[in-house]
Every structure is written in C-alpha cells, then in structure tokens.
Image (cartoon, rainbow, N blue to C red; front, side):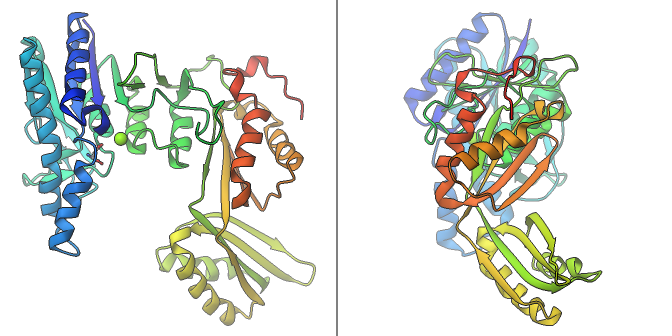
Length: 416
Ligand code: ASP
Ligand code: MG
C-alpha cells in the first residue's frame, strides 16, 4: 500500500462542480489501492473576501482574530469534500489544523509549523478512511488558531507528507506543472518533467509562484517526493526532485524575471574604509532590503555604489540616501525604477562553464544593455531596462534551447 497526500488549491475546490471532480479523483486513487490524505485550500477568492470584511471593520485588525476568521475558509471546503466523498460511499473524515495537532509557533498570519502529531490520522487510515485536512492553519501552544501565510496550504500538505512519510505529495493546481518560463511571454515555454528543489526555490523566489516557497524548503529538508499537477487534466505534471549524485543534470531549467525592483546609485563617494557600511547601514536601519550591490572605484579616488531595492521602497531609499550622500560629501544620488531583473537558473551551471557568455551574447545580439550582473552557484541574474524584459526573456529562452526539450548536460553543445 502506498500513502499519497493530495493537495487541492482554491480554483480546484472553487465550486460544487469542482469539489465533485476532486471527490471523483480521490475515489479513483482510493480504488487504485492508495491510502489517501487530502489537504484543501479555501474556495478561490474566499480568503481575500474574508480579509476584506475584517478591513471593513478595522484599519489594522488584530492578527489573532484575523486568523480565526481566515481559518473558516478551509473549514468549509474540507466539510464539503467529505460530504461529497460520503455521497460516493467513501468513508472520509475532515479535520481542522488544530484537530490533527498541527502545532505552530504563535506568529499570527505567518506561523511556522513546529510538529504534527499524526496518531489520529494514522488511526483513521488504518480504518480505511480518507482523511481530509484543512490547509493553511495550525494551533499554537496556548490553543490559539494560527495561519501559515498566503499560499500556506502547500506547506500543510508537504508537512503532512513528511510527518506520515508519504510516498508522494501531489499538489493539484490550475497549471499543469512548472514551466521553463512564463508561457504568456514565451508561447514556446515547456512544462518541465522534473526540477530540483534548489532550482524550484530560485524560480519561486524570482516570481514563478506555483508553490509557496516554504513548502519547497520543507520538501527539501525532509526529502518529500513532491509533484505539481493540474486538477483540470490528467498529465504527469512536474516532479520536484532531490538531487542525487550521478543524476544527469540539466544545464538551464528555467528563466525567471521580475519587475519588482528599483536601482539606486550614489556617485562620487570618497573611497575610504566604512563608506559601504555608512550607506547600506542607513538603508538597513529603514528596514529596506537590498538585493544586488555593485561598487566601482573611479580613477579620481572616488567610488560609485549601485544597488537594487524593492520598488515599493524606492522613494524611501532615495530620501535616506540623499541625506547620507550629503554627509559623506558624495557627488550625487541617481535612481531608476524602470528596470527588470532576468535570471537563468540551472544546477548544471555548477559543472559547466560558458553559461554566462551564452547569456550575455544573446542579450547583446538583441541590442539589450546589461546594467548589473550577479551570480550564484546555480543562477545568473542581470538587470536591464524594463522595456526589454519580454524581448530578453524570449532571446534567452531560445539561446538555451529551452523550447526543444530538456537539455541534459551530457549533450550540451552550446559554444559561447
Ligand atoms: N487560502 C489561503 C490563501 O488563499 C491558503 C492557500 O490557499 O494556500 O492564501
Ligand atoms: Mg496556491
């Protein structure tokens, strides 16, 4: 017997019709002989609707009460699915997070799971029942209801799978897997058969929001076999793998991008010890996150600092920088919030050189100027003018042959 955890997102349980379709799918898996645990989100739009109600009453509603409110969304869908399963003669039991002891810390609105006591679930499974668990919620030490942050049902599912040592955790959603890039920008984008946890984390944090990042971290830590599939058709989806030595590695898995950043430059700073700290220190004091950083020393003994921040922090960052620039006798502060970041991600980069030059050549061929570059072991990111975002992503997608099928490092012939 295999144990499978299936998680269905908001659109997959968004109507009675859709809930019936989920029930049919669960019954099929049960008839195939699997032990089944099902984790659900609230109906699509429900969490937002509830949040709006709270904000109608209070400009900053108490976080504890918001969690009590939001947790009702998932309580509705677990009961409805269990009713639909009963209609099919399938013995099912629904449980809230607290009832199956999903213990979290007490950070309302973004609580972290500490542990799960799976005794009750195992007992039901032994009795042949399907167990239906509310996603996104848990309970703290004092019995308060907590929620795990938006998209948190993914994390509930992976955590349940880890606790139960499930054979697979299947996340059913409205897309049929993880793509090489956003198909709205590159129609030739392809579904990936598999992707490593590390690659998925890079793609997720860069805006490919298929899974909550925390759920992917969890899957990595506890080695949970994880698959993303569509609840609207029967494809194989994308398997998120745990890299094994000897496994053939892809060179580039995907291309991520975002428009969420802005760039700031402090020019003509006297080049002395402590200036980086002076500049970035005041930015950190304002709780502004810095992403890429570049420092360049000019011939005249001054230095230029360029870095990127969240676009929403652009105004605030400009103001604090103008103050510190004056203090340091820097020449000027300039900024640009019409930038975009494009990243190529792939574990194969570790063992192969030449990825950067393929990337830079593809952009040069399109006449796209690179403003900033940063690299990590499995990622190269560039900042370009925002208006070149689509063109750049398309050029890179074709330069790495991503439309052609998964390229393995053994067979790569790109010459830079
Ligand atoms: N219902 C919650 C949300 O909309 C949790 C989830 O769907 O994963 O964020
Ligand atoms: Mg989701």
